Image (cartoon, rainbow, N blue to C red; front, side, top):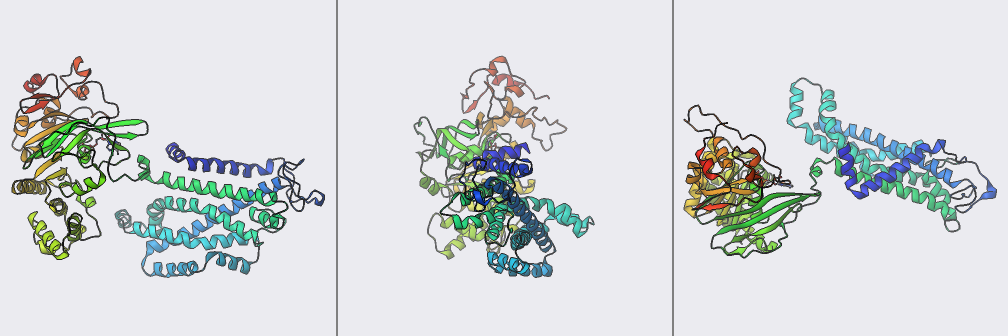
Length: 627
Ligand code: ADP
Ligand code: MG
């Protein structure tokens, strides 16, 4: 609840709406006990007194009645009628929607066609017709307003329910023997309730206006009873001579409807769990770059990162996800990046092509040189040219990277045509060829499959084919096999390895599994808390790890035929990158840590073709992992 209010008040306008509305509601509740004159007592001698007259703060109306008193009582009535109408419409409309959506088939058809018939009338006309048939009066106006809003709720809620009715948890409830009513109450209702609340919060204001409209026309509240609409209606004749009689109720209607709508929008945003992460805005097409100085780009390597720094600014916190990473990879080479979850591997990879979501992400330092050009300063157009064409990505979850509604062939074709003109026929032939090259059997038929018709391994092959579509120079694979089982993983790895040899590809392979690194990578960089802690040829590092973290990571990997070796988990947790400790980030979890490890900056010390960020590499290298 407190979190909800926090989110709500972060949206200033919604907070303002909440404050104004609470104030009005309080006044309406307190009206009966406030020392106000009777709102219906006429005093023809005191007609049209201006505001701030003696005894009449807001003046009087055409019959000499106290405007303040009428305003308060009228507001009370209008709010009550509007809220009642909204509740009735929401209750009946949602019931209809849930029943129709849940039962589906013919019941759904019949109910929804009836609702459609109601919707086919212009609804103000419909409301007028209902009041005309029932006779003027506040209760009848309420019924009319509620009735014309029922279809709105029914349609909305039915849509949501249809989506839910086929979900697995509903099937499970049915199998467990629950009746339809039980399922609706315990499974469906909790899921649609937020939608109902949101629909209500955005329509209450509207319904208050509609009731006021009917009263204005004389079809709602009857004299002498005051509501905001009838006050406006009665003041109409004196609009020019005594404008305050219309301005007073007018301002109140404005305040009520505005505050309800602002609050409604805020409530909708605050209930949506996706917004809780603070991602209130859509990310920009390229990561924001805020470098203090531009480092000289002097690299003959195909792709080289130089002291790259990427941060996330969330609220008043700064997460240093990538804290000065230097890496390089050349044609035909495979570079592994390994580290625990949260160590900054993905952010490093995404920074290369400016794909880190901004806001909150920002590249704050360093350079990415690709074929001698700095990509960090590059324009969006340059990046777009390169993305998917020269540098391609493969991500972890192929189901979320492939569009569910297009055939895989068409998605491959789109990837090619995004970068070069190509006749449809040729593109299709090439798509089949690509699927074939990633060893999808019967590619000519598979090309017309939808993603859901394929298995996870197949889908990941399609993603790889898509990455290959434009014959890139570099492929960045971000844990491409983590979602797959071990046999499929082995196939995908050997596929990538073959492709690298055949096409002289450079591969950056991100993983948390040393087994995978051993199989595929020439060099490996170990990341911890956003920095490289050890780097070098895979064989050398596997043979003799010199950073305690590397050593620990390797001890986590089971060996086939390795006998009954104990597997050692790494005690403790990786540090949060918004408050990194002084000195070595691994020190709190390290058995070798000394006082010097906790002070100052510890450099990545090169040593031949390897490098390690540790003060005591020899000691580490000579000690067995024990606990
Ligand atoms: P991994 O090594 O598992 O791929 P990531 O590169 O995804 O790790 O994340 C590295 C760090 O960046 C995480 O510890 C996280 O704190 C931070 N981070 C990533 N995305 C965001 C974000 N949108 N907002 C704030 N922090 C983020
Ligand atoms: Mg990741």
